[in-house]
Image (cartoon, rainbow, N blue to C red; front, side, top):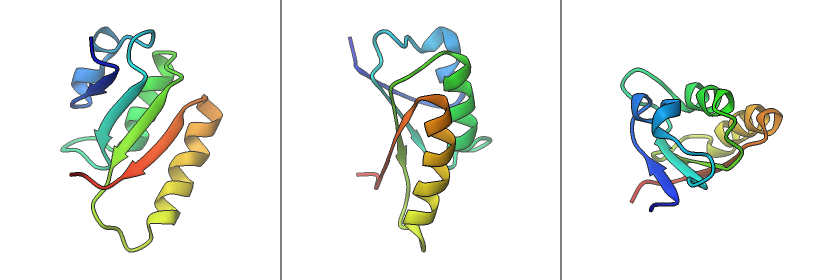
Length: 86
C-alpha cells in the first residue's frame, strides 16, 4: 500500500485516489493537458485534505508559482510542496 499517489490527471480520478490511504499526491506542474491547479480542483472535489507535491523544473520565479498554488490550496485545505524532479 503506497502513501503516495503518482500519476496522470486521469489516473487521479476519484476512483483512483483514496484520501484515507494516499497522504501525498505527486504530479508535474504542467502535464500534457492539465496543470497543478486542475489537479487541486479535482482533489478538492474528491474531499482530499493531504499534500500535493508538485514537480517543477527550474523556474525564473519559483516563489511566485508557489504563492499562487498555496493561495488556491489553502482555501481547499490542501498543503503544497513544490519540488524539483529527481
